[in-house]
Length: 290
Image (cartoon, rainbow, N blue to C red; front, side, top):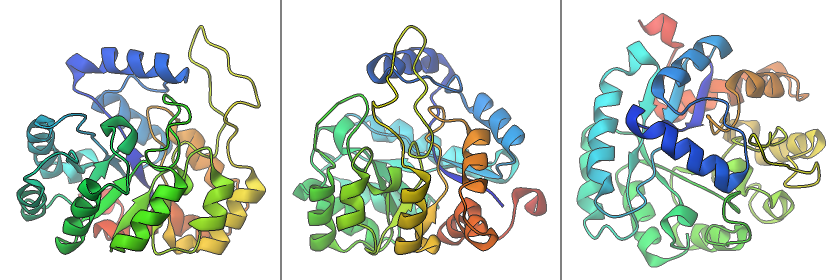
């Protein structure tokens, strides 16, 4: 079973504009057009059973449409393979009601993005959301480390993540991008071994430049194979989740990267889907559940 724990799609009428804007700010190539249909075709090609959609509320009020859509997507997960998390903004004063409503409707988790939401991960507004999510037995996945479109901004730096973990001690926290994009040495020193899950999104393959842009080989290099193996084995393969950040990485390419990483068969099975299945309560590949 393969579960991609970190993907993004946009409504068909918004996808082109959203992808174009993000590709321009990041200078990174998109592998897909950002629609759910393109993601499902990619899953079929790559042998991915389920993909977790991670919407981000960039302003208060957006969560209403995001969460209504998440509940609807999840009604059809066995047919489509798509599972959606909810969205919440740190300035949502009614965060308790939002999280309780999501939990009661079977939504397994929420995505937060300190850089896009312009609030530091160790701010009280996030701390109370993370604590409340734990009370509702929900997963919180956060962007971790720097963001390719906002160089140097430390809203979710390793230092701030470490402080958050010390204060809140969340039950089901996933740190995207192997715990801190583009600052993996610091992750090894300060995060590896903590009681969190790390996902592999946008961390193992070189960044392909967007058309018309240039990226040098030294600019935001991915994890080396040696460092990835070291981090996995120090942290524990049972706490690593396969994620691609699709449409910004190819699912087929990322599956191949895990399979060719030097991990043994048991470690690969855990990372590619076993760990996510346990976290999400999925017992078998989708083909066996239909």
